[in-house]
Image 1 (cartoon, rainbow, N blue to C red):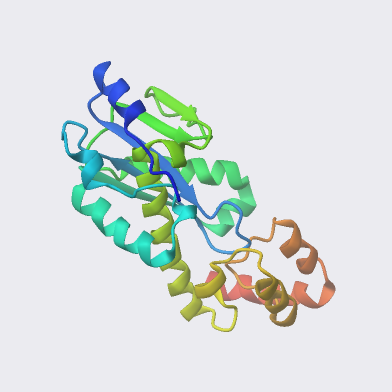
Image 2 (tube, helix red, strand yellow):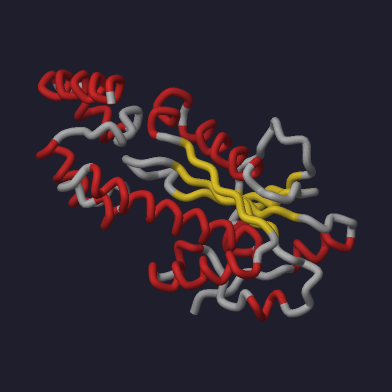
Length: 227
């Protein structure tokens, strides 16, 4: 049975005077294709029934897709504010996955309709954000605000990958969401690289270095420039 995240850290910070605490998390860091997506969630910590309202919220990776979708809507109904940020594949290739993740998280913060007073994050610190930051390993499994952010980020990214599957049919993006599954690897070898593949990631880069695919990449780049 999956253990639900708790409000222990959030309530401790609340007692220290931080009333608006944003939990942040991302989805898609390890994928071979598609963006990295971050979410920031501010919960109404003053509500005594908050734990009951968000019962079952935990690390998104531990939940079945239909459960994530249902809980994401519940989080949207309860949260004070939600912000979403995206790091595109081109940004990932240009700057690296960690800077792209920080970009997405910073964008998510900027899109909150309420300014937070403190942040709780899973591993990744935001050095250019001038707010108190509490970075905890496995925060998405332990702290409710981060678990909520992980669900919102995952559901949002899954939806984006479904839309990208329509734009780039035949790659199975709606099923594997851009991750390195055997089917994705097979289709990548058979059909080549799309503009949403992360060319800096080793499996994609190895294929991109093959002469036959170099011309294909140049053609994709020209289409993107003129499209």
